[in-house]
Length: 380
Image (tube, rainbow, N blue to C red):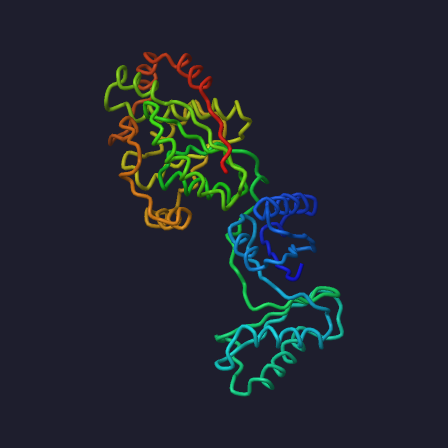
């Protein structure tokens, strides 16, 4: 192992000691899963994880997508003596930067040493200027930076900080069901749930008549999330029988809200089946003209588990931007399978009226049939 990746995490440090240890254990497990196939050894200190590997740049790139990691740096590990730190820092500087422009040295120290962080910065700076007299020091806006983090008997020298996505490690907040339609909204909702520590089942309630093409598209899109956590499952259950009954038995202006009520109740039944603690909706209330607190109350009436709306507070442009980063390309609305009953009609609905019309739907039989047809597929 000829390289060490220094991994930083943020929110975990705010937790109590027992919780922090448990979260750190989960994060390390997630790191091992993401780096499967790459030779690694993992060590930990409070506030830091160290990954020894012969492929530090590749490892750091992979870890930038792991929820719970704030940033990482491919480093050269050396002894925590001033001479060794300076020797390593000047060598790394020469290997990575041209002999022109401005630079800064940033040092951080944990533990007892015979020198301060400022001593390290000044000494490394002197050595770099000695070898590169045409360069200048600029602590505010340098062209190049070299970093030294000294922890106990070891020092880690690096020139790059690879930003991560932050958040909490996937799995620390339990299992959830994400209503996954294949839209950019559902993709971003799943990502945001993972970023807050939830381990999602991606639930596709299939509105089609069994076409393989739609399922393959959903499968391909769901695989885009594997870069964040490689152990995900896609659940598929038929929604078509519900839509046919709604179309036949429910007045047109009520169909959208009855469809949403049925979808949530079916998702809740599936959550109970697989042991998920909450539902994650991809609804963006900013984009739905008929959305109101009264209509939301009607839609959620029979939902007993927590129902989360991670897109609240994001506008359409922000959602599209996040989705494009996840998928690597723009997701076009016209590529999505339409669900006519899910198109909202303007105006508020009447709860008693909705309840009365729903009595015409054989909900119990539809639920049992859909649950018996539930398919589970591990994403790879």
